[in-house]
Amino acid sequence: MAGFLGLRRRARRERLGFTLYTTSVAAARDPYLFTEIGAPDTLDGRFDIIGVYAFLAIQRLKREPEPGPELAQAVFDAMFSDMDINLRELGVSDMSVGKRVRAMWEAFHGRALAYSQAMEANDPAALQAALARNIWRGTEPPAGSAAALTRLVLAQDAHLSAQPMAQLAEGDIRFLPARDACA
Image (cartoon, rainbow, N blue to C red; front, side, top):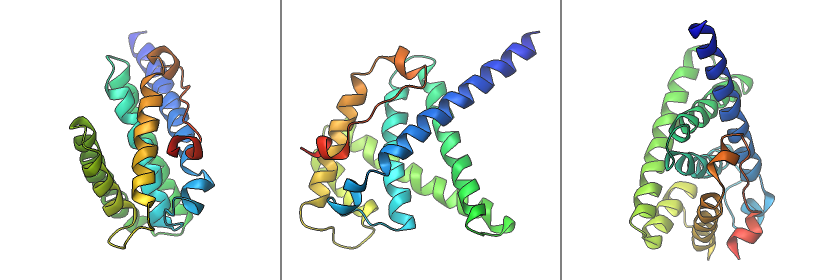
């Protein structure tokens, strides 16, 4: 019986992680990010913006006692399961998918570390530099874009921090519209 309950609990956690991740992806698809902020509307650019939103969700959940960290892991797992599926749908060979997903995981981990260190140090300039480096990948961001994205990330983080864990634990995470977060 205990094994069955553990499986049910795990399945619920996985569903919640997928729900939280899917909401993060929907927020990351806000056209404002690409048309007004100037995030690259490419496969890599979309991965990086999804990474920012997934990072924000994961960071919010990790700041809480259980089930926060457990749900943060479920969001991470959902993200990379989704990346695996998307690569396969794009026609990447089965032999290459694992290597590609691992490279994406490493990229996400590095970005998340840079963003979290800058945010924990309350250093908006370091956050802006990390966002510019990762979102625009070595090209100069459009004027004001990195600053706007930094304001967005900080506003989203503050907005998520105000959401009760009980709400998040039910799979209900709410992001601000990008335009409002940049204001």
